[in-house]
Amino acid sequence: MTYLDRLAEITTNLQRHIEDRAAELAAPLIAAAEQEARDRIAAVERDLACSKQRSGDLLNELRKRAAVQERKRDQLAAQVDRVKGLLVGAEPDDVGPVRAIRIALNGGAPDGA
Image (cartoon, rainbow, N blue to C red; front, side, top):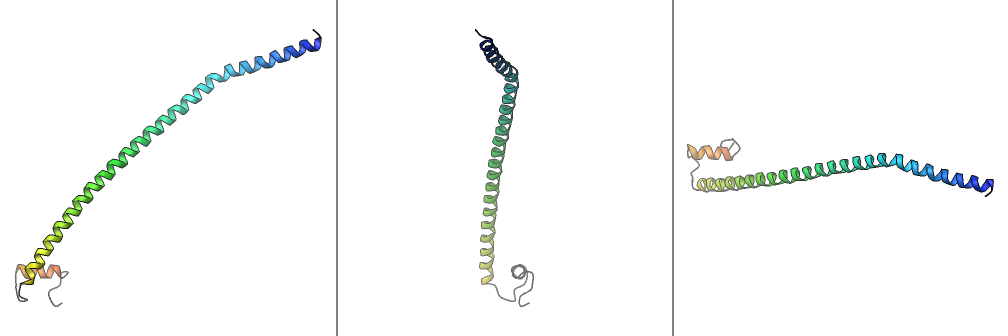
């Protein structure tokens, strides 16, 4: 074996040793970075799941409240129809509740105003 062959072998072994040692030193750092990334992903997924649940709950609540308001609107519309029906047969000179209803339906102004 010549001097150059021996030098080539040492260089090759040295390069392999450097690569092996670098891998040994980097392994725990890489593992820690991977674990941190997994932890962050898990936290984001939990937050996303909570946000989706909250959005769903809010949407359900909104739908319930809208249904209640629609029922109230329908009830009030039916009451207005009944009152209008009562007013059809009332005389213009009627006083009391009928006149008060007429004023209310007329936006607060007495008849003819």
